[in-house]
Image 1 (cartoon, helix red, strand yellow):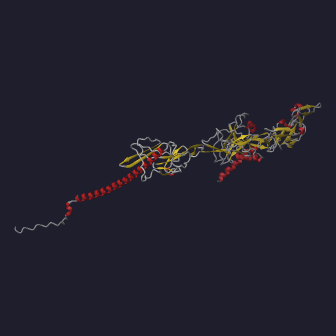
Image 2: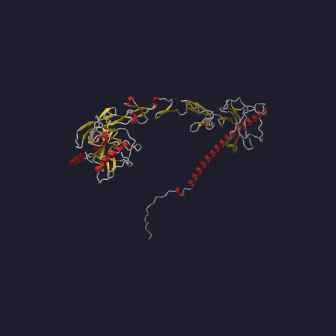
Image 3: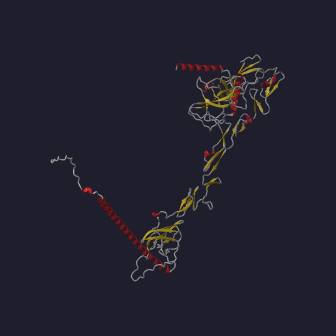
Length: 632
């Protein structure tokens, strides 16, 4: 354990020493409101972040193409003078990391990674290859750079993810890292009007003589003349007003009367005017004004530099001393005051039903069952003529509709808009009729057997007036002519055997009968019950009794049919009694036969018994020797 700890300490000291050796080997590029520094050093990602944070920064972010180009410039300054000739590919840490336990998210540009310095996810990404879907270890991102080739402006460094390393144990092929330092503003570089040299020292302890923008609070040391005297002039980048930063100088530095405007344009930003005595001064072009440093020019129209971004418009203030940004309707200024953000008008609920926010505006829509009319949501009548989705009745409701079916029908279909006939006669246990039941579309009819008739309620059956016996002196009812024709609406068949009814099958055809006329189907070999049917449309209705359809002949015929029905009923009863008696006789005969069969079997067993069973055997005795012959 002691040896391992000592080795780790030695590796850590070695890494720190190598970092100090390469501390001077760094490059600085400043642009907009940030500076980027590229460093040599074989460090782990955590060690690189510690190195950046010591000077007030973080490992670099690459949120857009402009930032990627600035980092590429910093790497180019670092690689050109000191690129190792034997190494081809090298990696430089940036501040994109994914913590342990946080998994890959392929739907996001950053794939679940986040920037060390914080802030939201960025949309720019430049991955080198597909990422590994692992959540068990921390993963860090670096820039893959070909060290043997000079950087090409159109080919920005690719992103490569992998292990982060640990203290004293860097990852293979890791050659350095890139830091980022953010500032509230920048000063213009100091322009010299004669021979001299300017050295900038930034707040993050980087020194450079060639910065395109100098960060706020940086120190500038100006040495004029050919003798290269350092420290002759010192200036500090300070905030003057608003977003303006300058050095607090007036007039060109290191001006030379011999060289005049011929050296670096006299240090002037735009025009340089020479005097007759070897002196010169700076001037500005039309539309611009000279600032207090007597070198820099600013537009008289503060909006000429397009300070407002996006859909924001710039308007100069009075006297041209400033500007303000304005947003179109549906937008408002963001916290920077120079850009606009969309206003969500739907938060104020301007719509009666649904509101959808769009950039700079919104639009209203209606719920299902409503339609937009003159800016308002009106109920849509789904039951309008020719548009009803229902098979039968349609009832419009607020924002919807309801389908219903006529009596005798039930709702059908997945959406309940269809109707199908309800078979009231399907279940005999719950049949609405006491006797016979006949289903018809949307309703049913009740009927009765011969000898019975429908009661006034149209459902139950009562004994007909012809079912009783004739009184003394009354003529007996006559049987109906066997050869007469009968309607074929209902057909019955009964089979006979040994004077007993064995089977009866009733088949019907759904035929609408328009009267209460009893119907009897008679043939030469078949006895048919008469059926009386009560017609109705939706529910059984009470009937006032039988209705004569063809005068007195019809009534006489009905009376004869009822008499036949009584005889047929009596025949059924007698047949059933005879059948029962025959079954009892058959059962009794079978019982007697079985008992006799058992007795005969017992007798046969007795006769088969051996005759020897009636004798008994004498016990054996030992044989004795014959007595000797005494007459020898």
